[in-house]
Length: 292
Image (cartoon, rainbow, N blue to C red; front, side):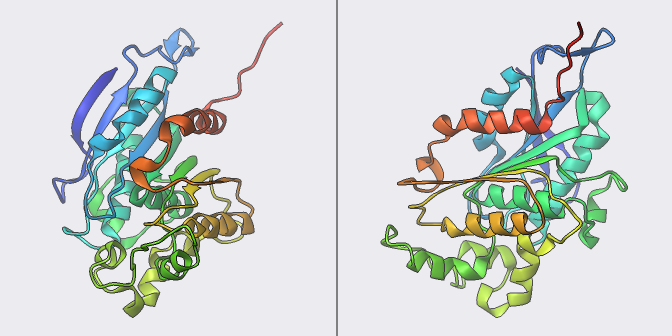
């Protein structure tokens, strides 16, 4: 596996770095075009950590699973809440997608086949890429590559939050959660992410909600969403909210609520990876044709 580490996709912060993993030879995906290796589909992997911690190194397990199957995997760092509040992290991951597209030829990537995969806070960012990736935020200009699209063609959201203001009620309604986190606290991950206690800024909460960017006539990319019903940090109903919003505008959604499953490292990723890979194959792999 070839690894290009700490590639800068932006210049505003040291956090704006990504690691790019690719097969050891350009033809590792077994495809070719006119005798040359086909460009690689790309998976942008986004780490969790409550928006306040975490590192791109934590997503290398996706590279180990996907690169042997002919994918390039870009594991992305982004500005955490201790450095900059919303929408900084969203702007960063959009900037990373633009950078990958702008440098596709250099690294043998296919700019038309990019997916986002994320866990927890990273799942939220992947969802934001999926629902708002065709929209330009005013802050996007600071990361350059103007005019390069930052939309993705598929999203895998693993136990990510969506609507910060409904999380507490959903946790209280879950009989499996004994000690729920209080999300409407001054120093909760969500309040720190927005820079204000969430109940004091409902308009900002709405702006930060991926569902807010869905509208009829703007079909989102296909989504795979998975969540454990015993999640004590992010209630599983958050994923149900996202799936309902996507379906309301005609989106393609695969939603799985896993019984008895908790958050983070307790999520059975190894068991779920074959389904995730199958989803990505279906969304990003070109249809093979046969000749007689």
